[in-house]
Image (cartoon, rainbow, N blue to C red; front, side, top):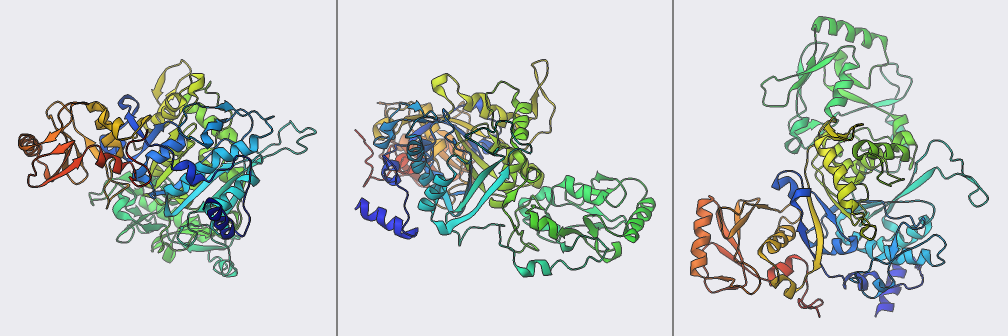
Length: 629
């Protein structure tokens, strides 16, 4: 049967299938991985309970983590990740993982002179890529970084797992802007580029702004009316989504007539506020924020004399070659943006806002080669990391924020979820947080990082968590060794969890109450509201059973005081449930977890321990018994 399935997969990708030593079908490996419970590390988490429930940093092995994140299976919009490149001593492999992926041995570092290093790398990556595909939404996208060492093998592997027809792009980006002085007999040329392979789970459903250019594209860029030597077309500076981007809804004042202009009903400005202000100031006058008491965010209005501003703006209009943001109707109409043909050809993303179907003109990329001005470069990434955590972190290669922000804004909607299974220094989370502030977006992140516990280096805590926390708080290290708030704060928060022991029925029944609460909080999801459902933990000081409320105001109760102790929902416990619910002003129904139930009261949903918990973790009794010997 396995051989028939492998042949079917090979036929689906044109008869080509990657073969290597020790190859095992990925689904056989993944189905053996036992979900882990997550221990919430409150001291390493940041933000309100709601903020913590929306984004997450997980310390642990990434294959085990993805299997344990059942609530997010099929819910991720973009997986953006930077795996080990097989450079020598950058990843470990344990041969036992081919038969038992739960083996706790971290394995040995794979050196560059290991003759089987490529097959070990493929055996390491294959089940993880297969699981990444499982995590994506039907219209989700994977963007994975790589260099020349494994580029070709990774490409064939992705064709095999995702299908060649679902390949969106192979992007090469300029990681250095000056050649390295290390060219020798074996290298011949200096490698100044790396690659991002982009695949859709289903190319027909994926929403992407990477569209092939057509002849009609150039035809839209007619001779400019302002005498600009560069062809451009008029673009809408607003986008849909005002209800979810209230920070992008405000008035702007025209220097020509002093009138305040707003985005149309239901729409908002599609560029970050700082950029809109810079466009306005291109007409010769400074702008400032002013509250107009119009129920919206402060407007951008002319600072100083409107008469002087009008005179300067009229001079610029007469002179020709208007600024990139311009006013229709000789200064008396709406504010628009010039979209240059040269920028389309270079693949420049003009907005930080995710364009919806009704956006004026979809972004079109003619090429997938990004120079360092478009993507940033490795030295910039290293400098960004040094600035936020200090030196001495032992990370020599760090992806620039500019690259990850660009990939995120192209392939993840403004309210989507980004996952990074190889979290490293936390660049993905930092990029998501920065984009959220830039464009008033609401993206979430899930970062998985194991660190190197064999070296006593838990850098999921010392590096990943530190960077993301300081990105939010604005804290930066100073020359005197102290940490101060010197940078702008970014909105957001996250929950830090650590993967713990594997879960089965016996393991659940052996948990203490606090451990059980962590498991319930981290595994919770609702069928109709899967990825966004969360439980807000309540203080344990006033209630004996009530421990959380969901986003609908329904209470969750736990009848559990540890292993071997009574856990029965009876008439007495039901009375306590209703009393605590009334005191907390909660809406029915009341959700109660207990081992057994002998009383079925009104407005109560009973969830049996351990069965309901294991369901939330994705156990399937037919293929994965609750009790695993």
